[in-house]
Image 1 (tube, one colour):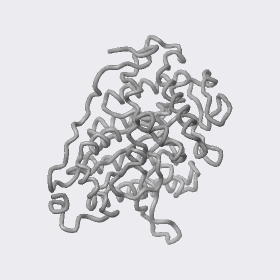
Image 2 (tube, helix red, strand yellow):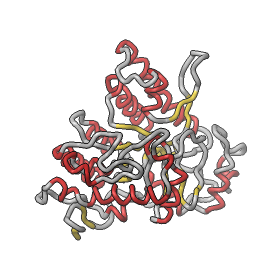
Image 3 (tube, one colour):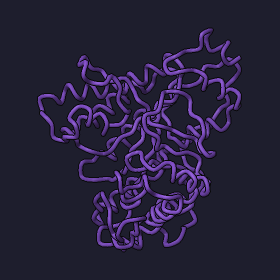
Length: 359
């Protein structure tokens, strides 16, 4: 182990539990990749982070945790954050206490050792007309540098030099992220490309087709998936993220009618599973699902995610992976094969079967 900087992080060698990517053989049907990801990834008293890390161990799944840099910076150190186009110390999300930072860092450490990816959700979560959609590449470069620094100096800012380091070099580990509210990708991509990032997961409303690149980075948009409804006034699709499901069901009310919790939970689960089945039985495009460790509407969205994970895991040719692992698989494929896969529209299988399609 080689400690880095103040010892908050360390180079411990290759990450455990990483699959070896295999190139598709001629005529071979591609795996059905599913990426469950988490925005923010704070380990709070609700216990959602260890809950899903433990579930992933049980199911043999890998995930991506988009760690918010401010969650490594205690509230009493908030003036260290200089957000672009906002006052020093400002943030549209709350800072954590020192103990909450320590609890979160401990869980991030275990997650990486379990084989999960640690990406970034940046810092202050500024959305809307004065938010990150206005940021230039230079603004994003500053935001990324600060998010990285907070992770790399948590021992200094918490005053706890006696604890074990995060077991990765974050300059090497960090190859992608998701922007706040899925905004600001146009400004982010040039900065991310200059840093050598390999993907971005900030596009909203994508179609369930095989991904391509933007500015040299793999573009992994959250897809619109079928939403189970019989109400003609409600759209029959929804973005595959817990927040969007909640907003569709309660218009943003996070404490809705408890009598509806069972119905809403089933709708959320069935939306995820409909997106999965549509890809699994047709074009095999990767499915991306976004989440937050939140207890909206009694925690039903956390329960719906667990229900969906359990239903998907273990099915033939399904791989529950991180974005980093998906990138590794895509990068070893024949580019001509990927081009061919991208010709399959949403919900469309190869007309003559996979053996002929990818011969």
